[in-house]
Image (cartoon, rainbow, N blue to C red; front, side, top):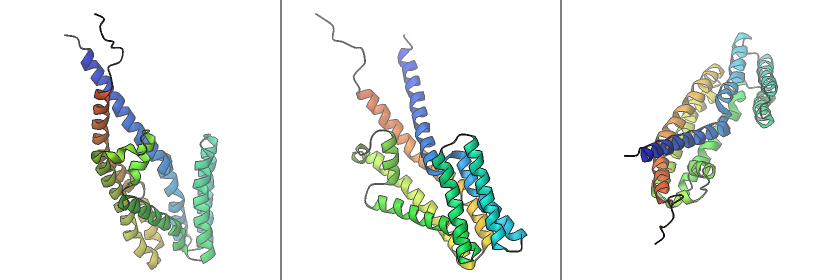
Length: 238
């Protein structure tokens, strides 16, 4: 008996796994710039908090320290020939946070932009689910070349909706923890919370989303492959 069907199935499964991982990498890169993006986004905040505590809560030197950290990250990214969009966005985020803190004279406002971003993301994800266009479905569907067709498949819709609500919960958890600290002016605790609730929580949400979405997409792709006409087969002549 030929082993061709088994080999073909194994190849197809491997290809499906690679496609799924490719989607995950794209989502991660688009969201935060990959693994280095997760570290780079938290480093200026950590430097700001450390400088704030070391200088006995002096705002200006703390802001300068954060800006220097952000500038060094930008220089390293440029030296590595990384995307100017990522470089500019990263440093702009640090600069605007520093500006808000300096302008208001309140150190806790260094974290205000991050809090507002979490509110915005939570609302976007929640609204997308309520209007039955879960955001993860839109993103992954676009990447897979199926921008709207997934909405006609109850399995895909449920998976994308469930995973999107996980992101709503993640952003909501950040706000529940950080907002009381912000209003209390607990700068040190805000810095710790930003790191603890940053990339670790993001990775958890990404992992749970993967576990929900990947099996459904694998099943959908397998069924689509079965429906495709066999390549190279022609009807026998009489």
